[in-house]
Length: 578
Image (cartoon, rainbow, N blue to C red):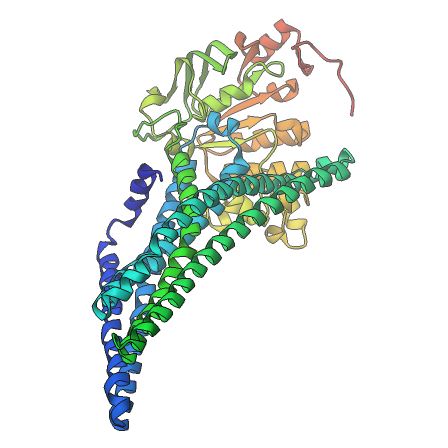
């Protein structure tokens, strides 16, 4: 058992000590109520029934029924307290995990198995919830009841109790041996389930790739192997858990038979009365469900403990966001990179890069694929931290800034626009649910999206499908632009804007952006020289270095790039007419 994980988990129960203590008190009270019930049973059989006092027998029955009703009501209330407390703790844990996900750096996510993270968040927290319920609502009350019932059994007949106790070593050995096997099977099952979950996500996310490659048969066969493995591991685990419970129950039932035989002999020899045996046997009958509950809970607790360890390891994972400053500024759009070096692992990407973007200025970065253009955008967004050099926003070092707050003033439209399943309106207002209809339409008009949206049968209520599959690439890009404009950014980053928009549309877009009084600074990343010509200043990157900078006409003429797109090697491609 991972004691550190359990200590960490206990923090989510802070402030819940009073209801938990109350549940223990109530569970103890329920157990104590069994004593008068058992004494009434013995009194009824030893004295009342032989005397023929039927009114007293009826009274004893009524009192016994009332005591059982009190026990039942107390059990329901205890259950309510436990569920309220445990569900709140699980909610807090899941909330902590969500926060943890947002502290991971982009480098961490680029290397992480996201489908496994999804499985941990969904499946392992659910298993922990089940374990917590089994532990607090079932195991602990059952153990308390078993303890008090054992004390009652000692009081009723200590010799029979010793006979019953002789079976405990066997229970302990079986529990210990099978518990290790169950733990091992559960671990294997969890890994198989993760593989199954990852495979299912792959099928759903890569459906188009599979069809384009005519790989349906290959993918079905591959997933079938995962399903077969899951069937075997889950079946073995379920069988072993059942065997564990059956063996435990059989041992407990055998204990009852032994007591009946020994007690019957005691009555025959006059050592014990019939009422004494019946009350003792009734106590054993009350004890048996609690012992069964303990045996049933142990596999759930073993499985939950495995999940708790997995969750704790994730929550303790390092890979935090690159910056942890707290200063908030009224960002004007001014960005400066100073002698920036950056590399992914051992692969250098940027070397000694200096770059300036002024408030309201339009700046472009051009260069071949792999020259580091998009990396600069990611550095400005604070997704990464340079190994050398510094970044400044309005002359404030990134080290000092609250990067999340800074990003609120930056709009980004990536090469491939991110569109999630839902309505057009939901996609535009993501991150700004409080935006008014007027603001949404203004942002859409700036993005040249309002016209095509209005022509759709359901307008802004139109569903876009998975990744915007029901819309064209250009329409998706316009929606992504409208989402960025709705933030009223002070800096707008357009990464390869002509990927899905023609040149005329991008030129119109830039003219729209320059018209407002509070026009944002614009950073254009691209290959298309016609679009780059809209900038006031251009930087040319090659192999991670700025090799030229200045007015677009001067730089592009000097480099021989004017009106010619760059190929992946940084040379001029022949101009194509489409």
